[in-house]
Length: 297
Image 1 (tube, rainbow, N blue to C red):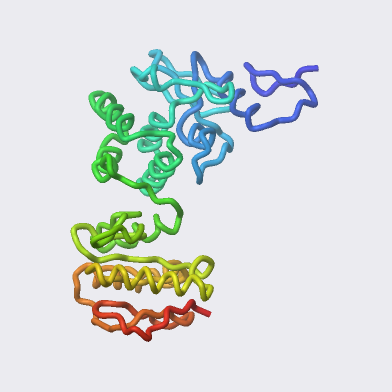
Image 2 (cartoon, rainbow, N blue to C red):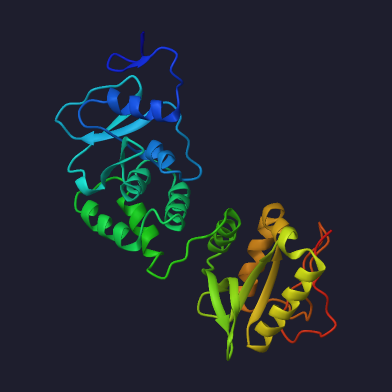
């Protein structure tokens, strides 16, 4: 027995409705050669923050007339790049790169930026793909081109996308006060010391974010202290921020990053984690050999 999902789509009665059922039904219910697109394509490619919820979105080449669908929002576009129309798990879908450009025309800039970084870190897109597609689509004056151009200008071939939501949050707080942070930078003096969380662009200033989970044990504190001393001896300045501060006192973190980047922070010779609710200490100068780096309660 068949059950009608729309005027164009039927399914077997009793068959489970998986996400693949919803995705394929949306494509089949769209007129012409349709592809899953926009937020629906982002979800289908597994980008965090996107869900396959109704109504789904599809895109088809412009046909001169528009038709409506019961199961999906249909987007019509002229000259869709055929090399970016593909399939995933049996469902026709726009490529990750094209999906990002389509999102730029409909979604908030911050959401698009996070989607770009996630797609980049998941190796769904490359620098070359995005910039090549920018050149192709910009000639046709599509929605979202201005947003994508500005976001891609900030991401050159050496760009390292944030590995976590925490990194993205710190980068955003820094951007709010006009500070550019390079992420996951390999640093050292005469020899390699290690990879630091952030480095203020065009400076010797390092920002390290410590979490209770990975920096709270006695062994973690010893390792951190050794690494910090090596960075100090190599001529770097350090700003230490604990993870909970980033979420609980973001305004104060913005101010500290701004002051640190300008070199106007009070030069206290101290590194210690704050008790919850207290103001953290920073380092700018020579480390006290007796200083302890302790995790917050």
